Length: 190
Image (cartoon, rainbow, N blue to C red; front, top):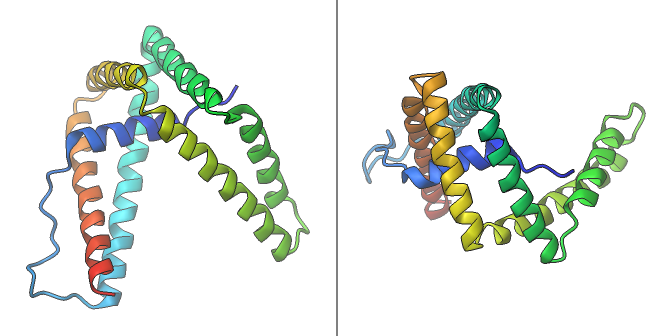
């Protein structure tokens, strides 16, 4: 059965709901870092975000393993989202199976660069289609309520697993906000 990206669901819910109130070290309006400096900063921030996400994912998995009812709650939420996606005409299971097959094709030795690029393009198209269907499903009020309840319960369980959870979430929110600020600045000053 198709499964949502559970870590993405949690992490994005935590980051979005937290409002990301960081003040980034981007400097004032009159400071203009060089493109190389900005790129290095962006890469550093992306690495920080990835490390924080991995740590939170590990805590999340521990919390779910220690709380079977919470895992059931997650599975029920996944089912709600998949059912909503299907009602829109999406085919999450079929698309998920196709993505697995495409991954094997990309990993296959001897595939030409052109073949790999074609496979990657198809995979991105499928991923985009799934993401759009998932985002649309997440607009459902019942799903939003279920997600909110799950996220709150999961956060409590994660804090019980690791007392630094709240700090990690706040750090991730700050890094994401800094990346957004850099992206907005880059769009304003191409």
